[in-house]
Image 1 (cartoon, chains in turn yellow, brown):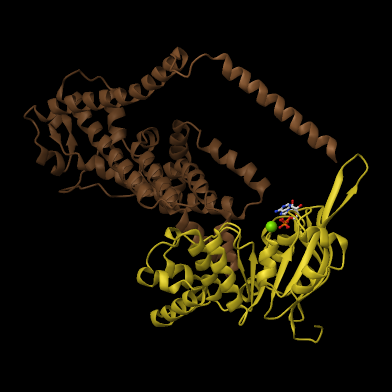
Image 2 (cartoon, each protein chain N blue to C red):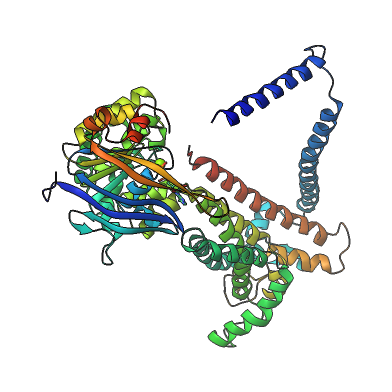
Length: 268
Length: 332
Ligand SMILES: Nc1ncnc2c1ncn2[C@@H]1O[C@H](COP(=O)(O)OP(=O)(O)O)[C@@H](O)[C@H]1O
Ligand SMILES: [Mg+2]
């Protein structure tokens, strides 16, 4: 898994800070193209932080800072001359809580293409239909595209958000616990959707749910927490990448005892 | 490992026992009188009812005096709405000259207050650093607390000379609608800015993130997502601003002019930005400041103006309510 071009992302010695506080330390990671890579680990270990560094979403948080190299197709995403807006057009994101715009279903999906300058009803109609079909939502909403996106159920809203993301045809879709706010049936729908989407897109998903990681992902990165007592009794905690392996192997034959304890549910 | 968790269970259990003891100290599960709650509830009811009755009382006084005016036989409704002048001495009662002046000053104030207020709100909500915002917002709110008489003199001694300097002494009268309106806009600006800023800040962060995640620039996110999502609050802010402009008295009384304009006919003088004209509010204060005998037609006429003003603001309020309800976005 090292030949060039097979990887969407390469992270080299990545440290991420919020202000002066280090959130993750020394992450080294290669994320393969057109596979599903899952980030698992206990709460607060920095899964979302690393995920958001992949499309420069961290830029929006005052004080957030990324050190080290985050390479996307060989290009350093944090190079001086890289435009974060362009990065996010190529690397889309689906959030934990479904966040459709307070607009119609149609306008939600057409939002991204319109930003890219796509005009003309026929073209947009086609993109909207294709994207909603791609997110397995078309059959449920085809008769009522003018309805507000907020009027849908939680699971439908999340699929609308996925449709909205694939409408701009990114290369990568980042998903931060996309099913954690959904019921089991909606969760299953999202998981099945991911398995189809991965034929076209590289997917990186943060999940709290180890069964979910096992069910959907090809590779799993397990993050963990390190702590250190500073003088004055203050405890410093930061996240590290503890183990990274093909999902199958990580769950059946973990390399470290810590991983094994985590996947057995002993902490986190 | 085990000590802290044990301690936790222990304390939880001891409060549980305590609660049970307290509950059992009460003998029955039947209703008991709670006089304290009743008293407070009655007091709160009184507060609510009081404000309703005050409004009704005002409406009654306005209405009955205005009825006396219209019942005097000196004026009918048609004349009231179409006559070109308001001259109680000459028994000419056309409200439109006063209304036109109110509309003119309101228009000028909104030309200032809406774009600048909304701009300030967008800056504060979207661009300002937290510290900048923490400094600017209180300053803005102080600006909203300056007594309007101060603004009135500001119009007279600063804005009017400025306008006269720019457009010429012959074009701009000493008392003029533009000066009063522009300064009124400055006065209302903080209200619109502050209310719009609240509306924008109430738009969930997640919507901005969604927009950025789809590759929008900051400006695109603001124009296409944040502003539409906050629109009902922003329009409500505009309407509150317009209501204040319509009802504002001191600035127009000092700077806009001390006599109604003439709507049409020879020497028509309304709708001239740099000419003097008296608004509804300005006229009411000037006339009631003079010696005015009760129950004269002049006196009663003021209530007809007051009633017109009341209807203006009432309608604006109704529109504002309708808009807020109609366009309220439900976020979960
Ligand atoms: N916006 C933020 N500002 C400051 N600290 C943050 C912020 N977001 C996350 N953190 C901190 O960074 C660490 C990692 O958080 P996060 O990436 O959200 O963890 P996870 O997604 O694994 O639960 C936590 O200690 C958290 O408190
Ligand atoms: Mg997280």
